[in-house]
Length: 274
Image (cartoon, rainbow, N blue to C red; front, side, top):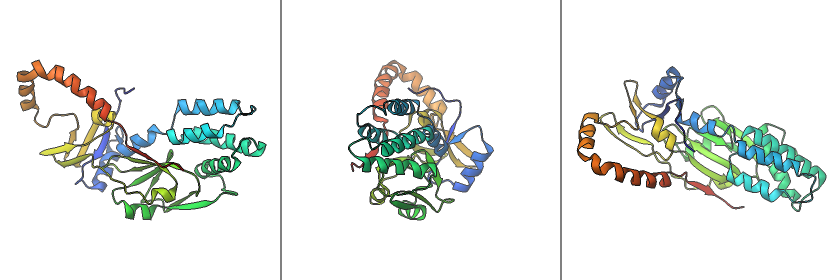
């Protein structure tokens, strides 16, 4: 359920300077950048964490827990707490020898290890090359692997499990987040499309945002002298006059339209079945 946020979400227009944008964001610490907003959403997931805790309590039973564990990997980005639960649970499953697919359980354990910075003993490893990612997709400024955020300008690489599928989120402050579920090798052969969130200038701009909160609380940065609210009419006086003339039909039609918009504003996500 969406709620009113207590902060503004800053996004960068297509032609704005990244350096000026970062300086503006630092000077307005009461706001959050789009990347910060997306990243913070993954840091807690009570529903996922509760289910993993419940699975741990069923460890002594004879049922195979791996299928449900794998399904949860596909459905959610793993929060830090969820990663700890997954590591502990898969470690105990491997040690006990329970389940019909111990190799799959071991891979999931390696996945959790890689993101908790636990040595990848007995794991097939892969180095995520952030320079290659930036070369392949120049729009990308950050990569989030599950709930861990990496800046492409500061992180040369990350070591992960070669066999495990991860939730990848490719991010910038100017383009919509692109999500993908699969291994690193599978990610690097994708033809991904990145949609700019705002294009134009202060005199006239277009917005393409698929997140309710960003649409409702977003502030577009064009330059240090100009920012515009996403929901703010570009010509308030003209819009007000037009609304007064047409409100008899605008209100009922608008309600119907918003119902359609709420349905259409859904994240696009690619899932690779292993």
